[in-house]
Image: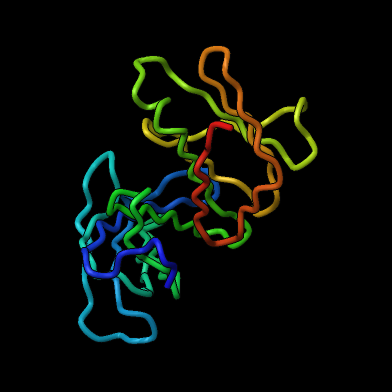
Length: 186
C-alpha cells in the first residue's frame, strides 16, 4: 500500500456507468463484493446527479453492474480488482467510472487547490498525445474536477484559469479503468 494512503478510515465509493459516451448510471444496479469473493454483497444507493454510493473499508473490490438496456434487455458486467483506498488528495471519496464498452476509460482531472478557491471558472481539454492544436476532447462534467470519457490511449492536457495555463503531456488512460490526474502549479 502506498505510504500516503491511510488504511483505517472508510472511503466513500461513488460509481458512475457509461456506455461509450452515454451515461447509463440511472439504468444500473451496482453490487460490491470484496475482490475474488461473492460473500456479503453491498448494494449501492443511487443518488441522482452523483452516482451510486456506498461507504467501504479500503481494499480491493469487484463490482457487478446489472444494466437495463434498450428494449428492457438486461446485461450483467463485472469490473474486477478495483483499488479503493483512502488518499488525502481525494478527501476520503473515490470516484470510479465503469464503461460497458471495453475500449473506453475515464480521466478525472483535478486542478490546483488554489484554482478551486477562486470564483472564476477553470477549463481543461484533452488531446491525443502529440496532437495539441488539433481538435480536442471536452470534459463531460464536474465542478471540483473534470471528467473525460475517452478511448483508451495517451493524452495531453491543456488547463487554464484566466491567464495561467498548464500543460501536461503523455497521460495514459487505461481501458476499463479510471485515472485521476492532479494538476500542479510549477
